[in-house]
Image (cartoon, rainbow, N blue to C red; front, side, top):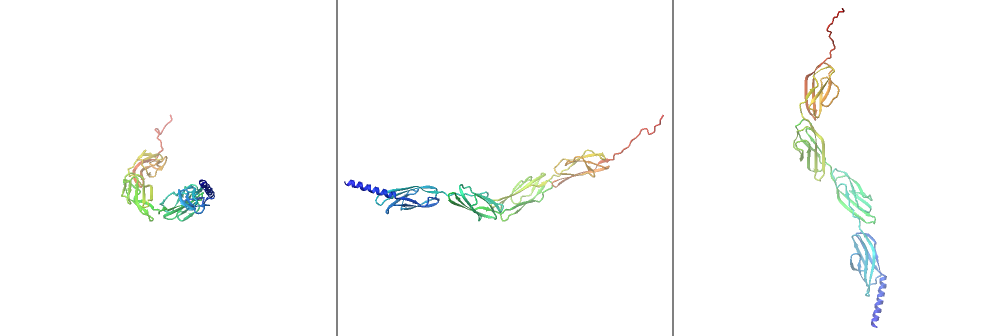
Length: 375
């Protein structure tokens, strides 16, 4: 009979606990938040004196009827609470998909250039963070609110520049990125140079001089290039005296690197040009001719540059090339020819004195028998 009563008591106790469990529920303060965030959980309907063991996605933890969970990454939370009743019963209360923790965007900034070497200039700033609803920028103190995934900013002064990015995704989760000193703007320097002799005859000695305006910057290296000279490359401020041995036009260049790593370069194509002095030979198609007849005069050898003929009064006729001309003398007499050849400031001359003889054309006739009698 005693065992029967024990069974009845246990049955009634179980029925009472089941009735109490049915009245219990979990209340969640937020069903969707952005990480990092805190959610408050409350177990409602438990009798006074109950104890609780919570599992809110991080294992079982003892607590009271109120429990707080901290989340720093994306997760979907299933809540399970074990309630130990004061009378010895036990309830397990579950709430599946109780809350969703969403990850915040991870913004990144890409700049078209991080170093501006030419003073005030523009930079394209962009972010490729996906699924963004709103993107705002603060660049060097200028606010580009809800501007979009890219912005072109003009930096007006030298120095280090800050760039801030604030983004918001379609769920309303926000994130920011502070890129202090992301962009640095340096003053441009002005690079130029000169040569003391830029034309003349080879061999030619030349001295180069740098002409640089630093604008507050400091030079770490100068590098020269000289086409056609005996020294084609030189590192340093003042190159030694150069010698050009071959006629032609030659480029020169100067590259200047500053202590901040900026590089400035000045290249001058055909900056210097030199000729070669030689002895031209004048070749004549004839030396004795009648007035009105053509004569061809050629200067040999043919060289680059300009051939200037002095024909002592003759007139040009026919075809004319750089080193060959055709001329006509109208008056009789002895004539001279002079040549002045110039290339890159180097002159060569030739002269023929009283070499060409021009005669007038004379008309006349002779009769063998000037008297004739009729028989």
